[in-house]
Amino acid sequence: MFDDLVLGMDPGTAAVGLAVVGRRGPQVVVVWAETVHTPPGLPAASRLLRLYRSVRDAITAHRPAAVAIERLMWGRNAQSAMGVARATGVLMLSAAEAGLPVEEYAPLEVKMSVTGVGNAPKEQVRRALVRVLGVEGVPSDPDAADAVAVAICHMQQSRLRRLSREAVP
Image 1: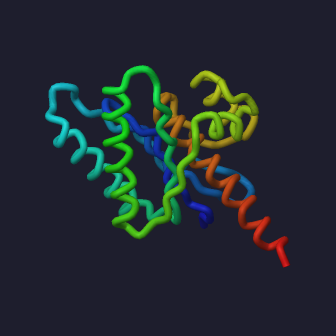
Image 2: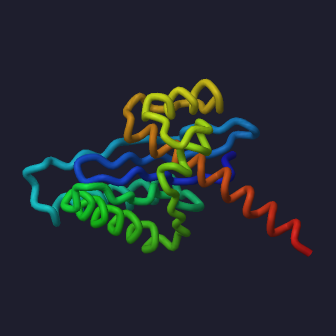
């Protein structure tokens, strides 16, 4: 039924976008998508546990072949970046525990693969997923839509890597 089933993740601390994307023939479809929210008043360890369990449950339910995660880009707010780095580590741990390969993609790389523009805003990414790439079932939530874009970026990159390995004698 599906091949190239990928769990895409858009990490954060307050909200994490998760999406399982696959192929049905030539059509790319969103199998499942969700944004996991963690209440700000919850202790950091409890927030991370919620993220871990959400990813573990998604992997168990959908059995993706690979995980793709958007790489953290450091900004001016070091404290916020540290929180996202912790969340990213937990997300990667969940995938590694399940024995899944994990690939990271820079935000610019994800946006370029979907829109052709490296600084595209979130709404442009969502529109490109639907209108240009014809992806079925793209969620309206921006974090979940970004997770779809990360998964599609991985599907494109993994196909190119596979083709380049086959071309080498």
